[in-house]
Amino acid sequence: MTQPSFFESTHGTRIAYHKTEGAGPGVVFLGGFMSDMEGSKALTLEAYCRQMGRSFLRFDYMGHGQSSGVFADGTIGLWTQDALAVLDALTQGPQILVGSSMGGWVSLLAAKARRSRVKALVGIAAAPDFTTRHWEELSAEDRQTISRTGRLEVYSEYGPDPYIFTRDLFDDGWKNRVNHGPIHLDIPVRLIQGTEDPDVPWQTAISIAANLTGNDTEVILVPGGDHRLSRDVDLKRLVRVVDELARDIG
Image (cartoon, rainbow, N blue to C red; front, side):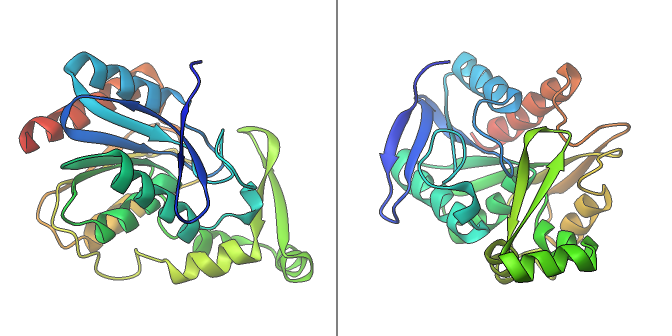
C-alpha cells in the first residue's frame, strides 16, 4: 500500500488522498460509513482510470482511514465538507462522483452543492438519510442510551470495531436529509443496488430514482447482491457503468 498525500482543508481536516492525473471527466470515489479508500471498489476504479488515462481521486473523510480526527466526532455535514474540499482543491473540470453506501448520500449533497462541476453520479447501495431510518429501527433502550451517553456502539459482521452512532450524527443527519422529497439534479444518475442487501433495502434505490427530477436515471438491481457489491462480477459492472458515463460526457 503506497503512502497517501495529504491536503490541509480550511475547515480543519488533514485529508489523506491518492490522486491519479489524467484526462476528464475525472472520477471521484466516496467511501462509506467507517470505510476507507483502500477497498476493492476504489482500487478497481483507480486501475481502470489509469488504464484509460483518466483522472481519479480517492480519499478518507475525517476520522476515517488515514485522515485526521476522531470518527465519533464526525457527521454527514462534516464529511460532506471534506468531499467538497477535495473536489474544489484537487480536481479540475467535470467530475463523476461514485459513492458507496454513505458515500451515496454525501455524493448527492456534493452534487447539489457543485452543480457546475458534477456531471454524473453513481450510487453503490446508496444510503441517503440512513441515520433517520436507523433511529426509527432502534429499540427504546438504545435510544435511551444515546440520550444518556450521547453515543451507541453497534457491532457488525464487517469488522471487529463497533459502529459508533452519536446524538450529533443523528441530529445532523436529519438536517441533511435529501430523500424526503424532490432531489433537484439534472445529471445522469446510476444506482446499483443488491436485492439481498441487509443494510440498505433495495427499495431505497427506487425511492431515490423517484425523487430525482432529472430524466436520465437508471436503477440497476443485482439479484442476490449484498451490501458491499465487491465480487468480481460486481466490480466489472461498476467499471462498465462508469466507463459508459465517462464516454458520454467526454
